Image (cartoon, rainbow, N blue to C red):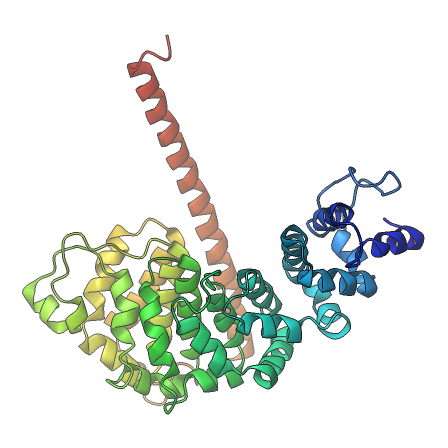
Length: 400
């Protein structure tokens, strides 16, 4: 690892007055260090192999502060490298407090994010998304966000198509999802007077970006942990159900009776109707629906709206073992008997500690089994694909 004198010399290159080519080499070197890559092309006295570059940089807040200042450098290449370094660093939870308290990145990032002409807003969104994955840092980011621009402005930017013509801002979706792990953020999203959740619903089918779709669906899933809002979410005031169910519906032909029982938007879908292509997003949608069945009122609505046939057809079509398992859990609730009196709200049921531990162990075991099943499935698909390719090559005369 670099000695203090070597780090001090590297620091001297991270100044606005340094020649652009030297400054560029310095940031490129640090980019490699932050990404744990092995580099040896910059200055002979630097150690060529770094197995823990992030740990080293965590101990050098002055170096990080100088580097962060270069996000305002005249050189686009230097700024780009600098932001990529902070994307790498923000993915490491152990650096979060240094970035927040020593480097103080948040005020600058949030101010730049507000600028509709700023070229690097996508990088800022990624950094903020990384910084909010863990609850402790998420609280700090949310506090600063509320003091600087407010969650209302963030939602407005997210929902305004073309807010920044130089950036897509898709990673605001995961940022919102991460923020809603906090009750304060969920309370804002679910405020009946603000109509925020209604503005987010159309993005469950946003075709241009799986990141944005997934972020919104993650946000809705987190909000559904607050079961007191379930009746409102399922009511005509929000009507969340079609937005969760439509991405899971396919082109299968249902009976007239089944169609008539569905929400209007899901009735008599065309033959070219496609399902959500991302299995992780399909799983989140199913998990959100399952959360809505935690209350008696929620179960009644999902049964009355004939959700079961859509999930049944999804399960028949589904190839991903984890998504199929999520389908089965939801179906069990939809076709099962109602819980006995006093246990209607599944989120309020008190589970003995020993039983809860057994359930957790069973869940872990199930996940391992599903992973093993997925691995075997992928291996079989790979062998099948290789065999088909070999057959095609033989037919075309490539293999003699």
